[in-house]
Image (cartoon, rainbow, N blue to C red; front, side, top):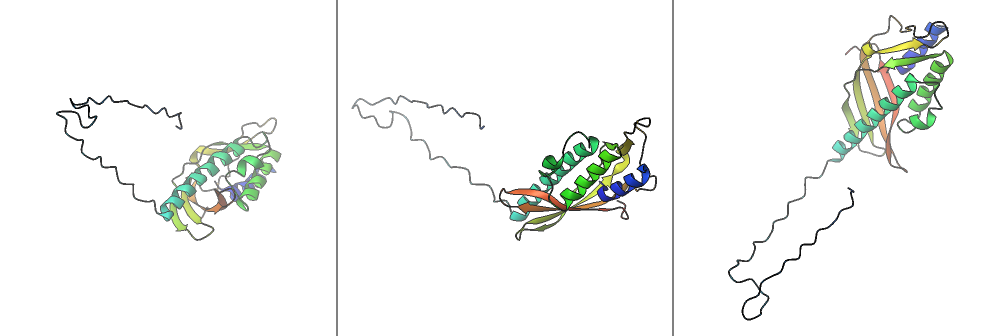
Length: 205
């Protein structure tokens, strides 16, 4: 998502179970011997002790942080693409704040407002292949996600009367490039948010 780049180009072009668990209690009737002793039934060997499964290996903090950051990064893309597709639909700040923190939040809100003022919107989706390239479990926990964006299927379209749907893609903008996001864990409430993004248009991938 060439967020800062797209905004600049847009302006140039558009001036340019728990299911209830029901416990089944099995009541076994134990037969008794002649003596009336309710002990082990006649002719029955005592059951061997049951071995409980051992607990799984604990998840390493680095792995847990990486998984949580990737999930937050996916949410960031999901909401930001929705906002780009319909920038004038509503105030997107509450939704975007579920996935972003400043400075990324304010930067993208500026971009959405720019799209709405043109007016224009994005259509399609970026191809992506994110991977975690750095993990720090020191407080605040921080994870760097490096992605390769493919903008082949994503376009900027005009909403101006008389030219609705006109393609506004900048012809010189790379269609495949590296994109980096820093995802940080915030307390109270505990959540992971994309804090910074950096499109690297000069680095094809």
